Image 1 (tube, rainbow, N blue to C red):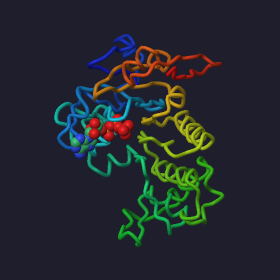
Image 2: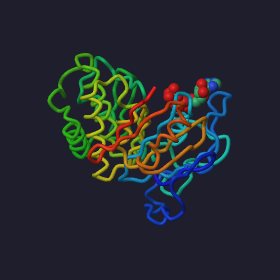
Image 3: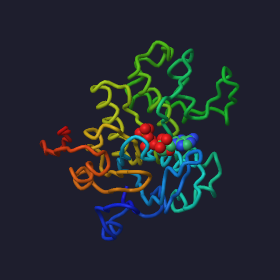
Image 4: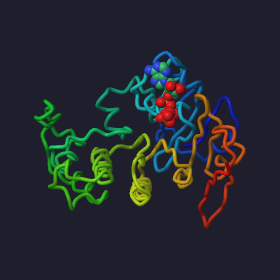
Length: 282
Ligand SMILES: Nc1ncnc2c1ncn2[C@@H]1O[C@H](COP(=O)(O)OP(=O)(O)OP(=O)(O)O)[C@@H](O)[C@H]1O
């Protein structure tokens, strides 16, 4: 993610644009206004997300994070402004093209309890599932099997590929949902609170898997509530009341001033090794 605008302290300027990835590798919100119901939940957001970068969207409850994420996926139609994927307006992409490039992991991923893990991951390749009346989108190939194997390996879910979803813990389910998203070989993966309900070990594990994918070239955009996990991202977008309060690398966004303005909470921000730690003072 490279920049944010409107309504706040921008912690980076045009000079950073010079270092940004070429337009063809970006997912971009341009002066985006989006309603949630009738409520103006996103108000004039500019943000550019790059492949090969771990970006996190943070901000208090109701700041507009989920609404922004859904708009970036084309699930919410903007009132005005535009989302561009690889420099082309999202509206000009066909639905299949768009869903190949952009994967989404929602807050609560409904996985089919009675289905085996491998079959769930195969759904990410467009495999059909007669239980849900879904027909395969095309003939299954060896490449599909290889992509499923690879997604299972990269999320360490291969060892329970033959188990049914109902037989998994919450953390294991989340990894299966991640494997399903990765199996489609998207360019960007957008996740809404992927570490919600996970214990510390599982949450760190999810972040570690995501980091590996980013190293392989995936663009990750994750809504995160835990600021200490968000501190591990490359770039942060801090939203407040639907607008960008700050954007940039964690050390410029996670400042006591920004966090007081966004959350109304006094914090200390400490450096520990190469990590930042946000400590509430209240
Ligand atoms: N259908 C709706 N009608 C009216 N207001 C809505 C509707 N859906 C969402 N909102 C409002 O839009 C605002 C932004 O919601 P959104 O879910 O995007 O925030 P968020 O930052 O993701 O919040 P959270 O951290 O609590 O998940 C909130 O104030 C919410 O109450």
